[in-house]
Every structure is written in structure tokens, then in C-alpha cells.
Image (cartoon, rainbow, N blue to C red; front, side, top):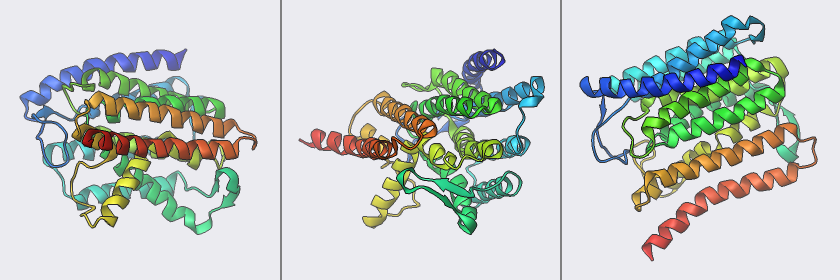
Length: 343
């Protein structure tokens, strides 16, 4: 009941807060100007993700205050680091910080989590079994945190996309945490989902405000931290795979686009709008089509993560095939849509 009331409160506060922030951002010139990476045509208020970060963090603190017995090792470190990541994202929305500064902050956040929360020491990967990672766990954990922060940030390019993924992934993480008997993570997942839904009330096409780096980096960092936090209480080696499945559309789109641009000799670190979801918008589909598609993909991959968590070894082949099919569909739908438009 406490978690449900908290989630409903956060949803309402998020919706009202983002609406008020939209007016404030317009008055103070905090606007996203159309550029090479953007898919919008007019200057639009940005930074709405600060409300997502603020109400989620405060919500978790309130739950922790009322139920201190739900605390898990590393929770305080995550909250402090998440505030730091969100604060730097907010400054980036205002002042457009350099790539070096942004990466330095992300690297510092990853190192703090690795030192005080932990690393991935093992992985249970579908049909290939359970493996001890050894020293590989250190660079893998670092790449997981920094990579996911950026992959999620790349998804904030059309109306409703980053918020929709956050709503779906947060809800599915709450279901996973419930199965793991980690109530504080249930609360975190539901609060992320609720705050994202409140934000979507102003960001679904036509968007009246954008999330900004403050929101996308916070959500990316949070989804990277959740399997590490879950490991502290359970030691479940499936959590890295489950965490990847929860945000698989982000990872798939980022990796596919990076490799495609690399193979075609295009500058991979230059701002662009050739991510799969952006290509749907480029050929004329409304933003809600691409965002809705990614929302459904996120829910489908979240269900795969849930099934993998509860599977006793019977469905591993089937789940692996299903995951590959869904990710292939993500790529195939965009290519089919482009080809159809050309014809």
C-alpha cells in the first residue's frame, strides 16, 4: 500500500511539476534549438527530466524513511551518485558542457558504483550457462554503466520515446524486484515508471517540453544501477542479462547504429539523427508511431526478462530465439518502412 500510494503521488506531482517547469523554462530561455541530432522543427522548452529525477529520488527517500528495514547495501551510494549525475545533466542542458566533462562525470559515477556497490562477478547467459567473470567483471561493469547512460540519452530524440521506455522498463523492473523480494527496488521501479508517465502527459506528441540530458542520463544511470543493487541482496547471476533485456531496444538501436555508421565510414561521434527510431520520423511517420513502437518493444523485452528470471531451465532456447526475433523485428520494421516509402 505504501508503494502504491507513493507511485500515485509521484505520478501526480510529476505531471504538475513538468507542466509548471515548461512555463519556467520558456521564461528563462531553457530551450532546445533544432539541430543535426534533433527531429523537432521549433525551439521547445527542455530540462523536464529534472522533475523525473527529483520526485523519484525523493520518493525513494520517503519510502526508506517509513520502511528502513527495506534498505539494501549500496542504496545510499546510488542515490547520492544519481543526484550528481542528474545535476550535471541539468548543467549540460543549460550550458552545453563539453564531451570530456560529460564523459568524466559518467566515468566517475561508474567508478563510485563499482567501488562502493560492486561489480558483476558472474553471468548466467541463456543456454550458455553460468560463468564466473573474474577480472573481466571490472571493465564490463564500467562499460555497462557508461554505455547505458549514453544509449538511453540517445533515445531522447522524438516526442515520447525516452519517457515511454522509462515507463515500461520501470514497471517491468518493479515486477522483477517483487519476484526477488526486494521491496525497495519495487518502489524504485514503480516510482521511475510513475514519474515517466507523469512526464509523458506533456511530452507525448506534440511535446510541450523535452526531457533533456538531466532526465535521460538519470534514467540511464538508474537502469544501469538496478541490477547491481539487486545483486547485493540476491547474488542472482541472471540480473545482468535481465537488466539488459529491460532496456534492450535502447542497446540494440545504439549498437546497430554505431556499427552501421562505422562500416559506412561515417563519423560515429558526430551528432546525427539516424537512429532507427529517428529514421521512422525522417521518412514521415508521426513521432507517436516510433515512440509507441519502442514502448511495445520495451514491454515485450521486459516480459522476456521476467520469464528468464522465473525460468527453471526449460525455456532457455525458446527465450533466446524470442529475444533475437524481437530485436530483428526492431531493425526489420524500420528497413521495411523505409523501403515501402521509397516505393
